[in-house]
Length: 333
Image (tube, rainbow, N blue to C red; front, side, top):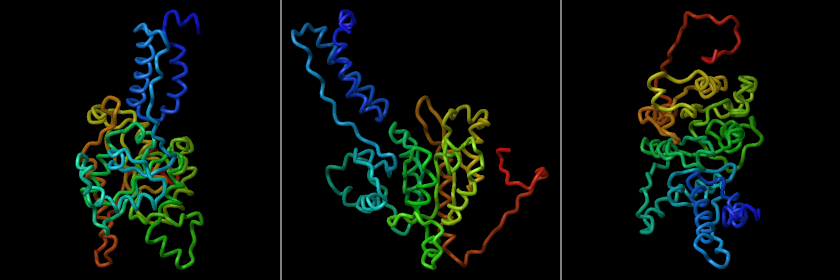
């Protein structure tokens, strides 16, 4: 280390400061880079400036901790507020946004989009990593749903906990009615579970296991189907392309691997629709607006579902291709 000091002044201080920087690695890449730049500039600049004593160690702001599971909203992100970790905490914050928006100190932020209390409620499953890296599609998706009259409940996860979130943190009017009659299909349901009218996953992959369960194809499909049957609400997969840019998507279509793991495998669980939302633009993920409109049908669907006098319409799809066996199949093959 002493020999290195001859060629890189301040390397000892940088190494010590690096231990502090390790606690900031879960922030967005831009924030982490800014902190590293601040440390290096302060330490090396102090030595090269000819100061007699060791340069003063730069003070870093405390990192914002992101819980393993939490509730996201662009208004929380914009105001740098902590992520709610319980359904009750999120519900109280969401209902009190009118009071917050009337405060003069919040006038510089985007005005909240107020959704009626009786609006359809849709749970959104999001990647925790995308929340940390501040992917722009998250805010666009949440606000687009609010503009359509949908009340979103965005929940971020690491990926493997999707089925436990749907099973324990979300409930439905159907499940509540069944439990009142003594039919306890899920015994781990949280007392503070949020009642929703639909579930939308932006994660893709199988509901059970997430990315870790994609190699097992439909082996856990029965577990996922049991959870979704107990909820008895639409389950839609609306995921952006994670390894493909929008330009290649529009010119060549969705790649085979992505089509399988993001959209086809969830159909084994019982997803009623799959909607590619967008794709990469350089290092960020952006939405294509017309694809968001495809998710907005949930508001009309939920309203029609609650009306018993609406005539049912059925569509029968036929195909000339016969499967060699009666086993459950999907577009993945």
